[in-house]
Length: 289
Image (cartoon, rainbow, N blue to C red; front, side, top):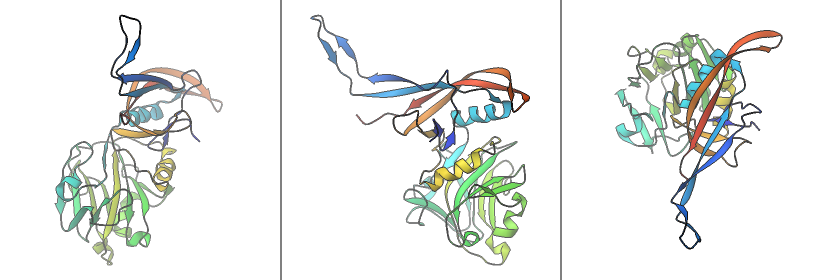
């Protein structure tokens, strides 16, 4: 088991800065004038702090954005237009016949999902420029009716199916009828569309746990992303993560914050590497009183 993961992505901690647990008490603990210790504490929350070992610069910058919860996610757990709102408040523009929320489909997670009839699409004005990765659990004719995890790196013209390299991103629509990416409908906007009619075999497309990460994802994260979902855990909901691993007493939802980083040159595999190590904090969400 990994020492620490965030939404299934491993976060390595250095031996000198393993996770430190700091409690925040909700309610006072005081000593009375007569010397008696008294507690008005109803519950406690924890802040977990740690630090990474040195890592290549690109990986360090991606980890910073993962910890900070950059991006958007969608769980489609509400009916109607509310179900199309991203975890950070973006509303979706619909074309064609779309079902969303409980009762619309058999979801991969929770009680609600998104289902697109042939020719339908949903677009969100994410204002995404530069490198990005987008992933979702999907079910349709392309997967013989089974849920499968699809990740697209449009800039790198690559896609992954269930954690393994699949086909060129530019071939997805023509081959599978899946439209998943930024700029397919509106410039700089994320869209998901059912283009199965283009393949000559129109069919519905089910979608759940849609995630947009507006940065380059290290390749080592891709199978971890899939394994996390395959084990029954959705990603996010961004900016929050589920923190888990041997360094924690139990999984918990956290809001992360990447802190100061230090540039360093180190040796790895016989080569000199220019990189960074950084400190971070994970603010645990409240436990039940």
